[in-house]
Length: 251
Image 1 (tube, rainbow, N blue to C red):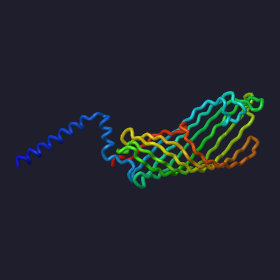
Image 2 (image 1 turned 90 degrees about the horizontal axis):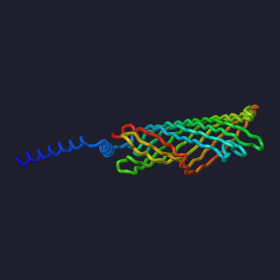
Image 3 (image 1 turned 90 degrees about the vertical axis):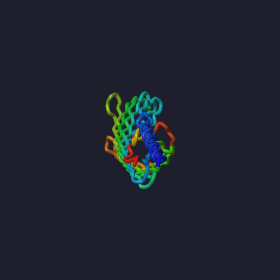
Image 4 (image 1 turned 120 degrees about the horizontal axis):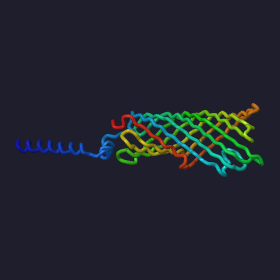
């Protein structure tokens, strides 16, 4: 009986010391402890929502790919793309979801066409709906760092307007309406920085894209074109950075 009392007393003292130690943990230690105890963000029945963005700001000096001059005197491009997405896990590490993308591309410049100095400006808008499937592959035991691969389909519509000027007078204007369909593969990395909040980095690597464009010039003439592209790129400048929130990550 005496041994049992001593044993129970020992258990109580140990539990008390452990509780005190836990209370004295630093914020960093508490954060790591959060991920070590029942942290399951990718289990079946979980939700996540994410916001990703991509921005490109370029000065054009010699590349006439976008503006169409024989020689560029000066030029610039500013492009951005914002995507809101959400997904639901139908099985452990497997999510189905939907993304909505809005993008805007703007370019302007001054250059030479034959012997004339021309100024040009173009603005394009794009809106895309993208159902997707995403699979996660944990890179750490506590799932705080994970690799994922996303397969998506894109259905989009866009419009653009291009104007040309000579001696500050508008000489040409074209408007274009686009329809887009695509299939793509986008791998990425998820890192949980604070409880259920995670940083995401994603890269579009492989994809097929079909685009139909209908262009109308300033005289009312209409032109229709179809294009098919298969892309395989590893362009680090096209990285998408985002922030995601995983609901019930510790349940």
